[in-house]
Structures are given as C-alpha cells and as structure tokens.
Image 1: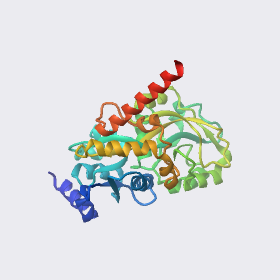
Image 2: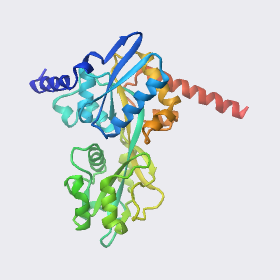
Image 3: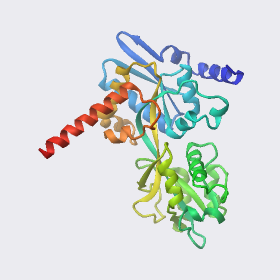
Image 4: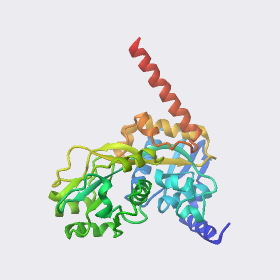
Length: 340
C-alpha cells in the first residue's frame, strides 16, 4: 500500500469513529448501514437523507446512517476501504475508476463497488452567447472560446471526455475559469459557448440565474452535432436525452434541448447482504412519495429510471438485480394481460 493511500485511509477513518463501527452491523435485529455522501447541500447529501427517512418509515429491519465523505472519488475509496457500506456517486467517476483514469491511474480502486439504483441524473447541454453568429453545432467550436465547466468538477470531466471522443477538444480554445467567474466572463464576451448543467427536477442554480440576468437575451441553444452526438451515444457513463432547460427566465431556449445526462447511483460494497440491498431498492421503487417529500429532486420510482443508470460490463449488486428482474417480470405480465 502506498504512503498516499495509507494517509488517505487515515483521513477517511478520522471522519467518524462511529461510522467505522456501524458500516454494517446488527443491533437488536436491525441491520445498520452507513452510506457516504457529499457535503451538506449536495445532490447526494439530499438524496441520502431522503433514503434514510424512507428506510426509517418503511422498514422494520434496516437503519441507514448518512456520512459526509468528500468528493465522489473519495467516496469510492471509502467504500473500497470499508469506511462506509455504500455511497452516492456519479457514473462518470465510477467509469473513470473502472478505467483507472485521472486520480485512479496512480491509485486504482482495489475492488469496485457494485452498482445499485439511480437517485438522480445530472443533465447537460450546450449554449452560445450570441455575439454575431450562433454555431450551427459543436462542429463549429474550432474558432470559439468554449467553457466546458470548472476543472475537476464531474460535469467538466464528462464534457471533456465527450469533446475528446468527438475530436473537438484540441480545436477549441478551452476556458478554465472557476464557475463563479462565468457570469462576468459571458457578460464581457470572453466566452462564446458554455455547457449548462442541472439536475433532473425544477432547480435554479445561482450561476445560471446570474448568467440569465446579464446576458439571457443573447443566449441560444447549440445543437450537439453528429460527432458529439455519437460520443454521447457511445459513452458508457452518459444517456442521450431531450432536456427541459431550468433556471432561464430571460433566455428563450424553448421547451426542450438535445443534451446528455449522467446517472447518479447508490453503489454498494460487495460484502453487504443481497437481501439488504433488495429491500433498499424496493423502498426506492415503492415509496418514492416519501423520498420526494424530503428531497424534491428524487426520482419518481419508475423502474426504468432507477435501473437505467447501470453501466454495462460493471457488476450490479445481486440484491438490486433481483428487484430489477422482479419489476421487469411484473411489467411483462401486465402488458400480457392488456393484450389478452
């Protein structure tokens, strides 16, 4: 084990002594699990607390504890190290870990967690700040200043991945300023094109509101173009999607734009019992109203939405897979009844 890895494990251990002894345990016939999420206010933090409330209300056998464990990469290491039993992680981070990319190149995950069920989707699409002509598609990024997101953020990582796969990265002039500096940059016409990111649901981000206020009347949608669309379709961590733009009151972007979505999943240690993950998956399916009462951006419990986040070729936890199969069989039976 490397010194850096050992240091990180000590850091994770220091997050919560209670968390370490309650990752997976059984007290008074109640199975107790600790899951890793991001900081307060993050998407995984909100989703984790909603799931914990749903477990408390709808399970007699489980108890879920939520622990803030840094960025998505640290959460994967925390599952691998046994600090938490599961974690909320976006599919780009999971995919990069499976391919030993980025931070995982120097410090690979020894045992990838198993996939569970989705708790959300981060949607992204291209906008142009029209200073004369709006590009007909991403194929015209070659002579533009393009803002693909703040460096190191998950939304930037997937955008850079897709631009490189579409062979558009080297041609564009990439802008790397922090997200909070973006409104001023677009107002000064220092950025021509930018990627917009939002979570599924009605959520208005601060940066989008500022951009909309300053240059909303000059914003226009950029079609993906054939090469970029092929990159979306071929990427294991993205889903092509028609997106309803959120947070734009001045900009006239229309009711939907073509873009891509990155699933956000609950990932589980292979050591967690299949019956436990099956019960958690059923709760997400059957009690979405409880989840949405706590987390307004929670998914609606549709089986396709919860299972669509699975990356082909990576292991799915047996408990989640069993519930997905149950729901598929149930849907097939109902469709058969309807045609009889």
